[in-house]
Image (cartoon, rainbow, N blue to C red; front, side, top):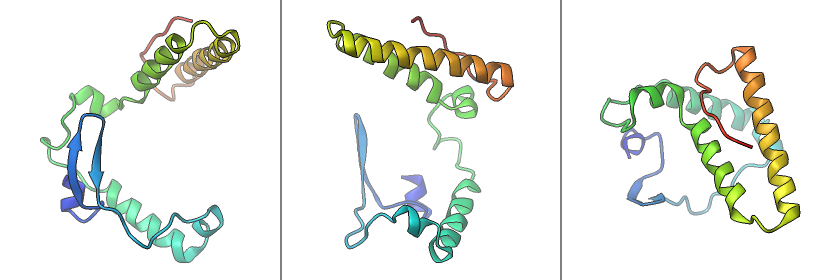
Length: 128
């Protein structure tokens, strides 16, 4: 809602438990990959992204703990999704094999990132 009030996002209409309602841009369509590379689109998009990332929201806008704001929540979100997938279809061997493969890749990725120093905030653990 705050980004909307600054003209950096569609008009915000409301929030519900698992999402939000924002303005619909009638008559517009997503750009194709080829169109995104064209300077007439890429340059204004880059400027808009720079503007967006240059904005410092007030403290009351980021209603998350300071540590989570600094580190993000993607790691814990992935852990949650993997947990849900692991418990979704326990009786399906093909599904279990695929989920186990994904879990193995996730553990590998966490180890690579920890050792590369890429993510100091990667503190989650999961059991395979």
